[in-house]
Image (cartoon, rainbow, N blue to C red; front, side, top):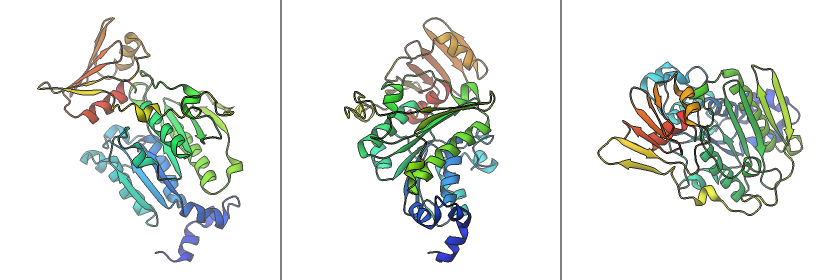
Length: 344
């Protein structure tokens, strides 16, 4: 256990910030958080929360480090990418070197209805670093069911959105966007992303979470913030009140948890092919999806299906959102690739 003076010195500049002070710092040290996703947003979130002295941090990610991550995912280096290290493991190693006083727990798992409550219900706040709408709906269900606030965030291209959602105090994700995750939204793998917007969105998420954990509830923004760093846009919209008729926070129907669905993945025996069938139809026409994927692989399409050859694997996408991932044997990997290239 570090000497109290050492801890005071480590966090001295944060303690000098009057809204936090010694009492707020002690609150942070006694707090527990979970970060879902350790990509661009998640690595910034994890770095800032661990360095701020939050006592317990659970890092959750299903993916490995790849060279394309290094442009914006700040906890990884070339050695991690060359070795194909698990992101949660590589991130934990770096963070423990930055602050050994924090208890860092890793979960190299795909968040589903099977494990969402186990991974997320024993913390004081949840931070969203995922790019997956189905996982966000699981986070929202757990947050509302167990009365846990969470910092929503998303960033692609040059724009991003964030909000700090508090059950009973603000609208939940379903209030804001509806109960059907849908598919076909922009992802970093289809429209790219630049690092500045990632840092801004993650920093706003961190700031709201630090306010909450340090006891500065009155300082919370109560707004949804949209940023586009390329177009010089910064827009803040009041969240308002929870909706009484919301299926989730109003009627407490936890549909994502109750769906008992893993993205409807089915292995087609003997073919090295996994079928992924999302809960809701694709929301983007195949011709638009073809335009998105054209720079990433060889694309052919008709009115009924699209095929994209990425070299190591191929995707056949049908108009209703069902996809066959060829050259893949692992269901979790298939869901990950679907989320990256199609949007889930």
